[in-house]
Image (cartoon, rainbow, N blue to C red):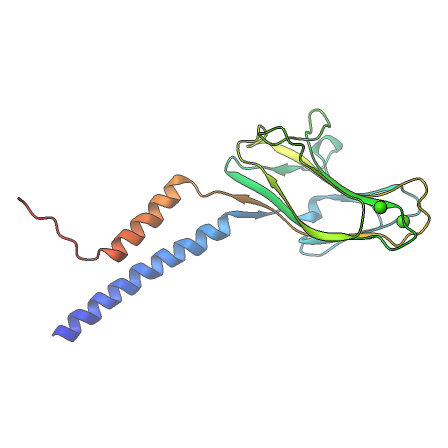
Length: 206
Ligand SMILES: [Ca+2]
Ligand SMILES: [Ca+2]
C-alpha cells in the first residue's frame, strides 16, 4: 500500500516535471528568431547557404562594395523586430590575406532615413573590422525606439581604392534576434515549479 502511494506520488512528480521541462524547451525555442539570409539581396560573389543560416562573401573585381543587404527602402522585405527583442547577434569570420586593403562593415538601417539605428543609449548599431578576425557581435535592443517595426540590416565587404588582391572574404552565420520571455511565461514556469516542489501542502484553519 505504502509502495503504491509512493509510486503514485513519484508518477505525479515526474508528470509535473515533464510539463515544466517541456515548457522550458518550448519557450527557449520561441526566444530566438533566426534571420533568414535568403531574404537578403546578395551580390553575385555572395553565396548563401540553402537553409539561410550562413553566407560567404568574397571579393568581386567589379565592385568596391560587395553587399548582402535586407533594406526595406530598397524593396527588400526587411526584418521585423519584436517588442520583446533583447539583442541581435551574429558570428563573423573575416580574413584579409597580405596584399589586400579591405574592411568588413555591418549596420542596422533606419528604412525611413537611411541612417544608422541607435540603441537606447544613443550608440550606433554598426560594426567595422579592418583586419583579419572572428567573433560575435551583440547589439543591445532593449527599449530601442524601433522595437515593433521593420528595419534593415546590411553586411558589406568593402575595398579601399588601393586594394589590388581579391582574396579577402567574410563568413557570417547565426544572425538571430533574442527576445526576453513575457512576464506570463515566468508566472507559468514559477507555478509549475511551485506545484512540483509543494505537492501536498495543506492550509489549516487556526
Ligand atoms: Ca582585396
Ligand atoms: Ca583592411
